Image (cartoon, rainbow, N blue to C red; front, top):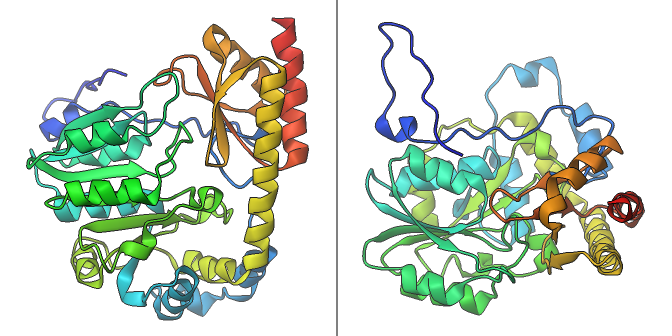
Length: 362
């Protein structure tokens, strides 16, 4: 998408050149109510009932009148993730984690290495900072993680590496040994591993933050925890790095309701385990269903599958929407591909039934 410069009124001041050069990012968030939401990789059944109960009981007028306190919530979240409170900061979703990471370590003109296709916010915040982007592409047709290409792209000029494991929208990931090779090669750079979909893949670098001083790991409550509306995540690293992140972050960027919700969410481990088990079963069901229809797909380690619909990608997306099912066209960066979030087995059967009717009618 080409950047478009709005017509400025007389006397207006132009923004920084980096902002002028950026393409706008407008996620299609309108008109999603009352539909089966398989487009944004959210939890498709909602958060734990404990979260709702905590919000109802933990909110009063006096509490809303004061700035949030994070102490008790940080202790609870630290126990859940097996870290210390000094090894992470709360962030306003993963988006702020990326922003704080970039703001802390990347200067104008420095090189940031990202992959393509990948989550749009990596490019977004690097461009806002005026960074010089270097992209490594996932190779078609398999879209496997391009480990050797990433290693080859890391040079003494590399200031930061940002990658997701598993990746969005491909669903493919890299093992811990591969992450360690990247960290070793990028010893003079900072490395952010976004683990938004960790619960569905089981591969994490979080255990390495004390040993590897240039490693940063982000997690979110927007996916498996079913709290996308609350906008809360965590950015983990060595305690010494966290002190610098705090300096580059607003002191109250995460609201009090979000930390109450997060504290309740991590207390209900059975809910998370049951939901993950359901999604993994539904992911297998979806892949088998796509195979029966003769539709190719990229094997996924996340809670979504990238289906190869070719020239029919957009018409199929539109027909599914007309049937009350939302999926996400990604053909602008992965030609002919549509990303389908995996929910429950019941929801997946509904998707497959509608897709079969549409596909066979074409």
